[in-house]
Structure formats: structure tokens, C-alpha cells
Image (tube, helix red, strand yellow):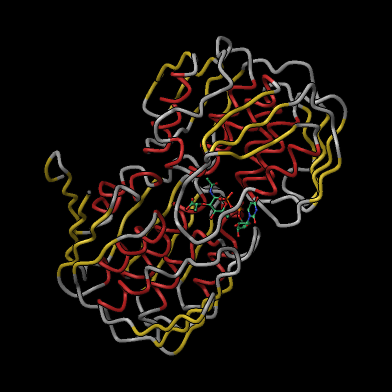
Length: 423
Ligand code: EPZ
């Protein structure tokens, strides 16, 4: 268990540099299984999910070398296992499901434990399975293990009944070496979907249309190695933008793609926050009162569900009433209870959270329920009066590189206590 201790009330000033995108790298690392050759991957964030996936790949026979703080060399030429169902911890993260598509695409076979991940209620994988079956695989789920097998994978047209980031990427992984053309319709358009497609194309794949709702994949025989740089993390950038809006002050968030932040910038501007955009950075200034705003999470380019806990926390101290609607997941407001402990006034009815803005929050002992709610609890501590302790079952370190250093560099009074000591 990690414990973050924050003494709130300090405005944030200065600059913070965003790391590589977690939700891109957790797909790109499994995608290296498709490639017989050395992949040099740059801008890799130093987060727990990366450590976990590189451990799995090593156990599978991959050669992995850290070339510098954010560059990995991964060579899966000698990977020779398709059954990783007994690997410890597969069920701890959501992105382990990408190993199904990658192993199926490499070996026409895969046996992988069911994915886990943050608990937002039901998180089925029926669209992943539908895609694999349309490509010619036989898929079964038994005792929490997904088994997929195909004599050979043939391109097909696949309509996604639900817009799914994971299913879109997973079907891409299985289809890149299938015979013929695959068309994914109603595809997810998130920046990390595009990043995975660009990575695969840089290794010899033939994927067109990523970033639109129709992706066409022409199967190729083999993928070779190469070099690739992960895009900046849209959600990490958004989290620091909201942190500055919440605590007040003026910060510049560097190494971003402003276009990816459009919906976040738009909502912050509506709330009275000043956002200035340059080519690769945004500057966030908030010195006056916050205005109430209504937000609805949607697939990209809509407002990201992974920013929902952070914006709800911010709006808890805005002037007036706000409504936040969560349209992606069934149950992503569990953290609201913790904000109430700090004095926030919010009510949740199904997937709608109604917020009555209060003058401020009071520090308390709270807990984080998942990665993004955990980051939101840190934001609550930054803007609260007094001391806040956030009990965190190591969710935050799964997706935020050096968050304590980065917040401290902006003027936050934050420490992290782990079993190894106080940092
Ligand atoms: C990815 O999860 C992200 N995780 C999530 O980020 C993110 O919240 C989510 O996409 C939405 O953007 C990773 O990329 C590792 P989905 P994923 O499939 O792929 C339903 C974070 O904090 N659905 O796009 O699991 C599903 O239940 C994490 O970084 C099906 O019904 O999300 C949900 O309601 C949290 N059947 C909706 O679709 C399926 O087969 C969108 O889920 C698949 C999904």
C-alpha cells in the first residue's frame, strides 16, 4: 500500500514534461510479439504497467534491453510460447488482453488469462472475441482463460457493436498478418489507437484509416524490426492541466500534442481557466473563481472517460451546479464518496453525478479506487485546506511516471510513503 501525504493550498507554478502514453505503450509492447526483429521504442514511460509487460515478454523468450531512461530494445524473434495462461498477474491489468491478439497473429494460437484492470463494473471482451472469430479463429473462455485457435487467419469485415479501444487494437494485432484485407467498422479513434497503427506500419504492416471509424488492414507475411517513438500521454497531460486549474496558478505542460487535448481545453475554458496553446505545449492559468460546467464523457474526440474523476473533483469547488455524465462505463463514480469526506456536495444517480459547488475542500484521510480516481484524489488534496492522506494500492504508479517529483517541481507539498520508506 502506498500513502500520499499532501498539504494543500499551494498554487502551482512552473513547467512539467509529459511522458509517453500509457495506453499506447501497453498495446505496443504486446505488439512486438508479431515482429521477428529488434524494435527500438522511444518515449517509454517508467510506470508499473510497462515493468509488468516487459517481465511477461521476457518470460516468453523476448530479449529486452533498456537503452536509456525512456528507450527500450525489444526483440521477440525467439518468442516460442503461445500459452501464457499460468503467468502470475495476467489478471491484474486490462492490457494483458493484447497478448491474445498478438499471439494469435503470430502463432495462430493463444491461451491467455482473462484481463483484470480498474473496476468500473462490467468490462466484457465480447467485441474482441467477435473480431477474432470473424478472422477465422475458434475462441473459448474456460476457467478464466481465453483460448483462441485458427488454421489460418483470413481478412474479414468486422462491425464493432460498441466503440471499443481495446477491441479495435486487438483485432488490428490479429489481422496484420491475416490473408487478405480486414475492415474494422465503428472503430475507436483514440490517439493511442492511431499510435499502435503507426507503430505496426513502421514495422512493415499495411494499416490505413486509423483515427477514423473505418480501419483497413491488408495482411502482410512478416513484420520486421525498426524504431518508433510513443506519442505523449493525453491523459497525463490533462491531469496536470486540471491540477493547475484546481490548485490555481500558472503552469506550462510540455511534450504534448495540443490537438489531443481539445476537449479538455474546451471544458477548462468554459470553467474560466485560461489555456494558451503552442506547437508542443499548453499553458494553463487559473487565478480567479471557477465556473460550473456540464461534462459528458464520450469516445474520442469527445471528453475522455479517463479524465472524468479529475474534472468532477475540479467542479466540486466551482461556483454553482455542474452535471457530469459518464457514458462509457457502468460504474465510474465510486470515488465520489471520498470527495464527500472532504466536504464536497455531490450526488450520483446511475451514470450521472450532480455537483453543488462548495467554497473549498478540507483535507482528510481518503483512498483511491483506481488509477484515474487516485490521481483525482491527489488533485483534491492539492486544493484542500490542511493535510490529505491518500491510501493507494499502487494504482497511481501504474499510469503516472514520477508524479510526486513532477507535482513537487510545480510547488506542491507532497510526499509518498511506501513500504520502502518516505519519498
Ligand atoms: C481502454 O480500456 C483504456 N485502457 C481505458 O483506460 C479507457 O478508459 C478505455 O479504453 C476507454 O477509453 C487501456 O487502454 C489499457 P473499451 P478498454 O474497450 O479497452 C465496453 C486508464 O485509466 N466493451 O474502449 O477496456 C466496455 O465495457 C484506463 O488508462 C464491451 O462491451 O475500454 C465499455 O463500456 C481505464 N465489449 C466500453 O465498451 C468489449 O468487448 C468502452 O470500453 C469491449 C468493451
